[in-house]
Amino acid sequence: MALSEKLLDMFNQQIKHEYDSRNVYFGMESYLREQNWDGFANFFHIQAEEEMAHCRFFMEYIAFVGHKWEMRELKAQTNEYESVLDVFKKGLEHEKFITACIKDLYDQAVLDKDYHAQKFLSWYIEEQAEEEDNFTTWVAKLERAQTGPGLTLLDGEAGARMFNPPANPPVKPL
Ligand code: OFO
Image (cartoon, rainbow, N blue to C red; front, side, top):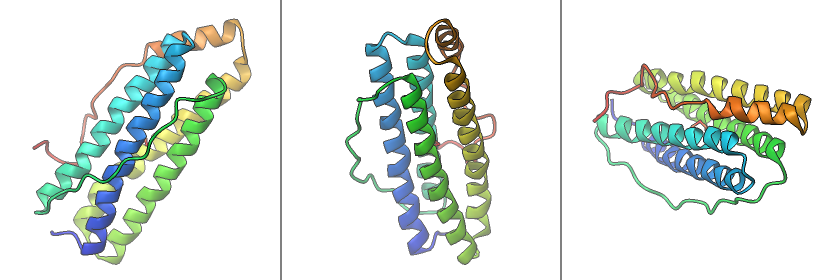
């Protein structure tokens, strides 16, 4: 069940990407808090928490199949945005990048005939479909609302988001 050298390297790189994602979303939260959009800020706070869980599952999988994980250098992240809509659009772009990374991991697991890793990664394929759908919906709603009362209503909706740990995580917690 050990990972191939190449796939182990890619899994470690994905730990970094998921950790970077967390920091991307903390940067967005920071911008929104400063703008007094507390509901949208809550949305990104929860998003950042979820990224930590995504990162952790990769660590746990690597340990489960008998390797050590690595902590690689993280990217500095911005807290400069133009508007709430700009934040969500950049969030969507970021999730598309992560989806592409997960697909590359899956392709490598197929090449390696690593069926166990494929099963693990299929959880992320589903998760990325949800992430992209969620951000796409928010961008559409925000484009409709533009500014004013509509945006304030959406701030309230985003403020109601709560952290729900995944019901069926792809690995048993360590
Ligand atoms: Fe980990 O899914 Fe978002 O980035």
